[in-house]
Amino acid sequence: MDSCPCIKNIILLDSEGNRVAVKYYSDEWPTNSAKEAFEKALFSKTQKTNARTEAEIAMFENHIIVYKFVQDLHFFVTGAEGENELILVTVLQGFFDAVGLLLRGNVDKKEALENLDLILLCLDEIVDGGVILETDANAIAGKVASHSVDAAAPLSEQTISQALATAREHLARSLLK
Image (cartoon, rainbow, N blue to C red):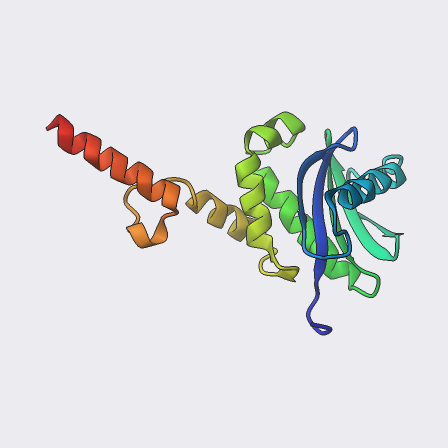
């Protein structure tokens, strides 16, 4: 794994340092309280900076942190101390732009919480187990949007909840005939 760039975590906090969405890919923070302590310390270190126009890069607790703020949301991507900052910024920008596309440009805490499922799917499409899968915002948003219920899709391509909803719909139609 030394040659493959790895992500330690992706964090989305509100303007008060509270969690909106987080995903950890490293065992460096074994407990939830350790994760929350890291997030609080990270927020307090970065809250005074002006990372609204471009991503900022900082060293924090022997990690490279790249972050960007928009309205009342703070986006963070963490990598190892020796990780390539440009790769981390690319992941951050992909996540940031994909969330913007999925929330139709209305990127704020209220919209993010109302569409938390899309944001979590977005994280799953970007990184899996710390390995970067995708950084193109259009591709990420497209994959996430395709996870919405599509009754015309074959059952093999639907999630269990989507398949049950489709089956329920077909049953209701057959009973009403």
